[in-house]
Length: 121
Image (tube, rainbow, N blue to C red; front, top):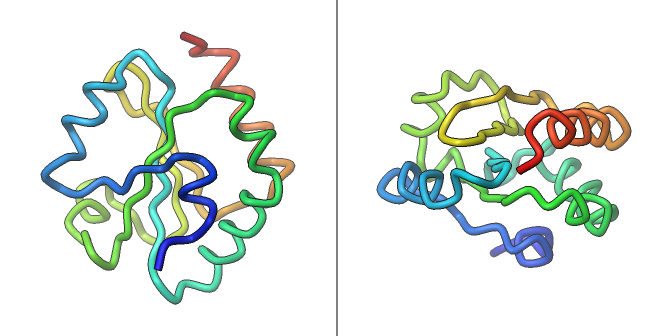
């Protein structure tokens, strides 16, 4: 079952076969990829908090995707993830950084605004 956050933020699920292609197609956008898993308590907390502030996040105009690491473990392995939730950020095909674990809304928004100010397309 899909979380309301995914539809509210128009988050497409990336799979191994589509990951690189979709990042390439959105190379001129700031891209955020939310790595999560079913029955992950911290992922559920992050989804709930993000959904509560969805308008603030959408206003920053990142292109959002999500990856269910339990369905696509090889993507988690590819990026060396040691826990979820993890957020990876990309611009022009380059990984800018990651946030893990979810630090709460205030530090999360500070990090998003910082990325936006540095890499605003």
